[in-house]
Image 1 (cartoon, helix red, strand yellow):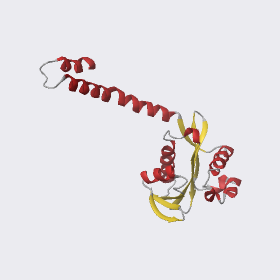
Image 2 (cartoon, one colour):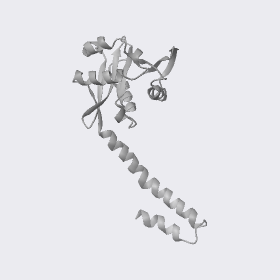
Image 3 (cartoon, helix red, strand yellow):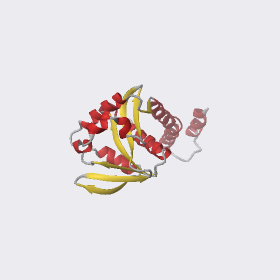
Image 4 (tube, one colour):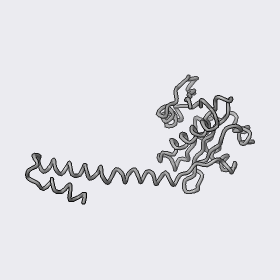
Length: 193
């Protein structure tokens, strides 16, 4: 039916525009009607393959965090790594440690560390290299912000190194984090929850 409705004006000689303009109009309407909703559905389905859960297996989290710690230039972000990995439950007590799974394979992590009753620190946003470019970082940050708010925090802060983690830094800015300071290339940021 839709094709018939659009085809009728295209074949009519009473419409005061060229047939090239008619064709362009027809295909733009057709694209808007069918292709864009299909593209949105495709993105939605690909996100359904990705789920974020509380960490139940600390060995999985440790493996992801160790892999993250090997990023060249990020060494300063891991000064207390041994302490953190020795007891993840205690390190993130009052916060959360989240793992992202694609088809049940652990591919991402993010954590919330309690600073005080009002503030939490965002830590360990990491997506395995083969799984980047799918929007998982944004989903991890959105989930983390919701969880932090549900835990009663009013503000989330973080530090990042834009020279090393430029994609994450730009994502944080797009999501509303404000830059609070820069100490020798390490940027402090925060967001109200």
